[in-house]
Length: 427
Image 1 (cartoon, rainbow, N blue to C red):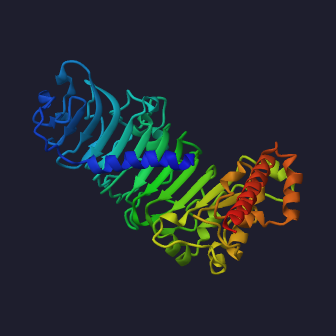
Image 2: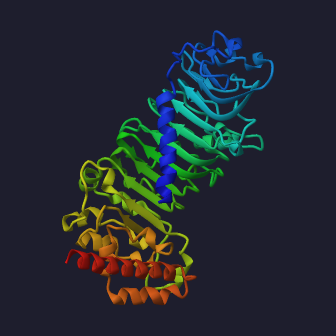
Image 3: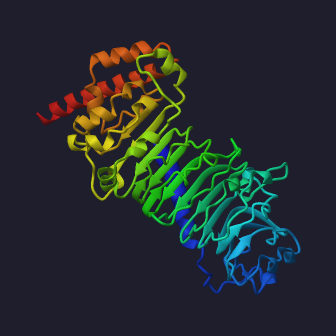
């Protein structure tokens, strides 16, 4: 439940940003930053700046306020494409919340106009209507004690509507970044950011908790997008509200620490039925588990990956029938990957369901995470032998699986009691 509450909040904030990012003020309210005329207006109040009548960042002089002003929302929309660099001087402003940038053609890695802020200031950066056509000087030699590229100054980053990526972006943009989420929205098959490769680097100290892939049509997820340096500490990938066209076979081959992968896509049925789904083999590839070896399970109890398969957002429900078994044949149970299946009611225990759930009793975290309404009937039908095997392993896994099985038995008992009561009332 907490996953959905968290992402509902993110989606609400993202939706608001994408609607308001480039809308020019039309109200007749007083302009609260007349000092910045003719380049900027503050028609929404003194905390909200919109600058759209400028051709160079150097034209903006926020020291004209006379004293530092608190700014909750600043939108910059130059009349011509610009490279973001230190020609943008933010002296005179104390940024509190949102920075919205439009019409960029590149970002200078050597310069960061937001350098006085860091991730602890909880600033959000949103980028819209930008064509990243200028190549970046992507070289590990740039790294020194003073190297602080732009994303290290923010807590969240959104690549939103009407962006294009004709040249590769540099992973060093994320050097020392600490983001609660990176949102890459509105992807199309041919409009897809790709990050260049950098030789000689094993880490860029990037810490991104969640990657959101939202609101795209014909979205393609590639190995070039899922860069191992950028996402070296990635916890969650949340793919939602998008028409997903393809995931390349090696897309996740450099992602080693992911714990949760969500699919709540618009075309759930078409995607899984029309794809080879060999990309599943690239999940959690550094982990190999022997389920018959208790020591192997103990060593990897913190290395599991949960794949959430949720067709409820799709135009057509997906029931995981016998005919769907071949579409999931590459699901990598041996990599300690587990399936979580979502539906409004219990599904039949088809070959597909039994295959996807064949390792479910070994899930090392909270068992209720995998024991859903959709899978309850199938899990309750697992053989006593499988349950006994799991119980013998739990004793050496710090009781994590014991807790899961206790939850399983409790839910089973509640289900049976409710079934008896309903039958009695309906008799």
